[in-house]
Image 1 (cartoon, helix red, strand yellow):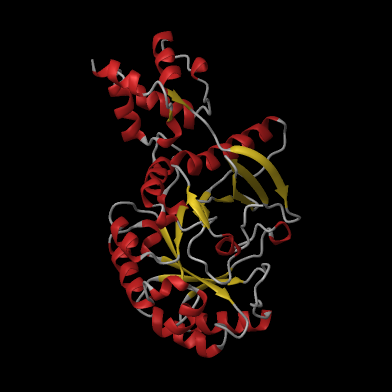
Image 2 (spheres, helix red, strand yellow; image 1 turned 30 degrees about the vertical axis):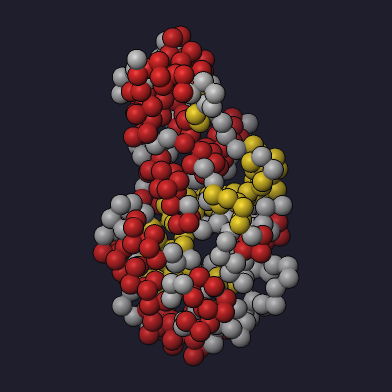
Amino acid sequence: MLQEIFLKKNQKKKINLLDFDLTKMTNFFLKMGEKKFRAIQMMEWIYKKYCIKFNKMSNFSNTLKNKLNSTSIIVLPKYVKKIKSLDGTIKWNFLFNTEFIETIYIPEKKRATLCISSQVGCVLKCGFCATGQLGYTRNLQVSEIIGQIWFVINKLNQYKLKNLILPTITNIVMMGMGEPLLNLKNVIIAINIILSKYGFNFSKNKVTLSTSGIVPAINKIAGKIDISLAISLHAPNNHIRNMIMPINKVYNINLLLLSVKNYLSKSTANRGIVTIEYVMLLNINDSLHHAKELVCLLKDIPCKINLIPWNPIKNSLYKCSTYNRIINFSNYLKNKNFIVTIRKNRGSDINAACGQLISK
């Protein structure tokens, strides 16, 4: 009876199986009247064999294939354009109905990072970011988040068959369009799939979620998901952060750092260290006085600081800090025993660099 109700319920709107982690996939098969192991088999077809056609899943009976065809689908984001930078960075544009999002592949010699989006646009309106200028449209579904990764990995596998070998994706960063923690439910399921041995099977140390500081959500995920955390801080005090990041008027720096400490107390990812992201804006936040403030602010936070030379966007009055100011800022922090990196400028010639994503 349960099976009949399930089949009737799903006759009109088919379920996209890319929306399911293992727990949800298991429940799906149980409601269908199948055994639990079918969920693992399905996950292996999708994420190990990169097969999304039910009729090619050889360990499923014809009866099961018919059930699947009548209740479910496996649909990827629609790929519309690929743009390659002079430095090798690749930007893939995907279309969801009439909405575009962007995914960035950043190769290095023996590794590659995939930067994925979690929303169409962004509601936070950070002054230095192009996505904020775009405005917010909606959250991405799990399948739309996961589909970005699936598509790019599958595309890289296809390139290998043509002897065009690009570095395998070693790192996933949720630093694309949108604020991940404002799409919390779908992002958590997506992370489960990214980490699961039946999914993409990435190490928690190789998956990073970047947030502008949604304090209740940081506290909510503490102890529930364990991946590397990056905080878009970008200012050494509330006055400057209020100007460039409106979210600070809701959750100020003090509240943000308390939530970071809470998260780190329950995390073992990235050796219990948070990444502090700090965009370098000329004469806004880049003086040695600002560096001194930052040292005082972060003295009790186990962190590494990633200085980000600002990438130009349209209709912005900001300018990037000069090379000398960035180096002086970095050296001051290093002399105070902070781990500091300066982010390489990748993909700026195709508007694929940090802060430039605007879905066009």
